[in-house]
Image (cartoon, rainbow over all chains, first blue to last red; front, side, top):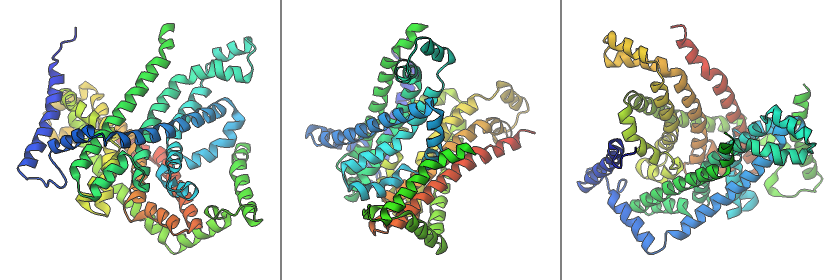
Length: 255
Length: 249
């Protein structure tokens, strides 16, 4: 039976509150510079005020949208490429060396190139996000598609499936657990790159909010932005976990 | 051999089409330069030392950040790994801090350190500390109980207990976290330079783009690819070295 007040959980909450409280006291006593470390209460006050006057939602929506579009683009291309590479030796031999060479490139390094082609625009941001976020989902789906078990391959042969039917009805569901795991890592990277491109190219959003807060030395705003980013990352991660549970529910039915 | 040939088809034909179409005037986009110009720009940058200097600056900062993260990550991870209660108490706070993109701390680091090594190294350290911390906690917890009992029986002082028993036993796993973080450190360092910090490879890259030295920009991009590739290679092979040294003991 789960107790309502688990002592460990209470202690964990207490620990976090203790850190915040110590910070607040140090800030109140002016032992740490309020320019760098505004008291937590001030940061929360800014957050509350921005919720109240509605100035929080636009940047939040812009950042979420950019992140989602870039991530979706990366997912679609990553799964398609992964299916090709994972299920065909020829495609693997053709593409693997090139991809292995590009992969270690820090995603932010393609920002200059993307700016040249697409300007300081949302398209640029989405392209950079997609470039950086594609690798986890690509690697995961290559692994998923190439490790379809022999029994499943035999089943599809017995049923006389063509290549397309095999991919769609057998290989894709079998690779799905890997793919979803890759999608989760990709989403975290997408959020990071959203912030990076916003800062680099002055695109309105949470990343830019933090950046401009620093320029005007409004550190309470900066912390408020950080808190929002943390919440966004947390929410995105949990949405994926929900998706994972929803999509992979059929696997539990087998056992 | 055949696989090497197949793998070269796409990049080679891509380069040939690129070069040919810009020579014949089919392609007039300034942003594309030409493969031959890129090679030339890269050669010039290598010869006058600017590329190597920038590489050195980037790697230096990445290493400093990684070193800070290693010390903090292993120290905190060992404590949290040895004392499960502490881990459960501090865990949620760690989980709340971990998903914040390190890059988001860049403005804060700028206010505290100004432009330069401190700004970049601190952001790198923040990004690198989490994999090391989490792997260390897991590694220390997976140490055989008997080893810890031996340490207790020998009544080793706490410092010796760490250096003689705990860290050697956990090192092989901690190494995995170190390798992950080493790869992250380069990426974060370059990112900080591209967005903010006026030094190193990332800054040179964005500078080349803004001054429309397109050939140089592409050359630096290829250089970064090579650097990342070599780093990955080193990490996947030599990274196992230190662990192997512990073994015979």
